[in-house]
Image (cartoon, rainbow, N blue to C red; front, side):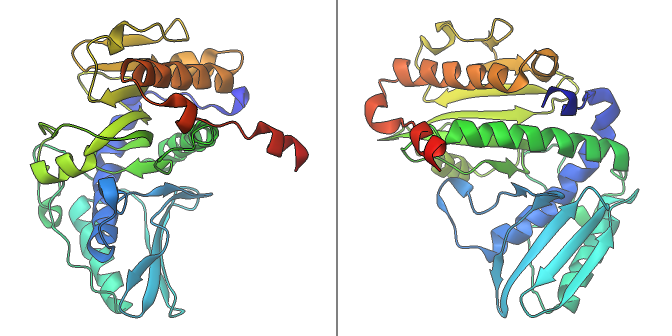
Length: 309
């Protein structure tokens, strides 16, 4: 996989990311408004697909429909079980223009999608219909990012397979624009204090209602302009950040309360998959050991089944 890992430069990506994140928020909110509430907001996420990101099947009045970001042909596809379909171009266009056309396309398919028309976890929260600020889209850069997500998705899926306790899918959160997978101890957690911009406290507290160890991939921001893998737990034991983790390039941020591993270090490794799995496993162990998780009951190894199939 080493030769298939693209270089990701935040400064080159950031304008496209800023626009596409808002597009994914619009699509994610459509899924949110049509789905029943699923624990920890799992009903709002998107998923990696063979061409980009997908909502998977969403229920509506006449069956199901699905919305797909295609970062190969650079289209947004809307497909309904009625046999009807529609699409719009992913190109240099404002968030307002994207929002208007998407809502028109959905209405044309008979799909009612009345969403909260402002972004979450972003400041300032410009209403989608008025956002002419964000309008950048580079097909090449977005395809590059999606190819990185493919590799990460595969490794996160392998990591997820080692846990028999409650665990999230490998999914994409459009609020933070990050790919994540989360393990649960099975015990309730203290009420979360909140703190994310434009995010209701009740939603944050439901998301963190139970003890978690979560890992993911984040592209960075202007204050921290480089892509990283992260790992955190909630609640966070005082000794969590003092635990030995691997590889040597991993570090703990006291400010963020998380372990980080730069993406650039992963793709330089002789074996990026093993290198990243080492980070995911050792940071999970830091959370599970300091949080007194019942590891014997929660972990599993089905490698024997894989050899025999």
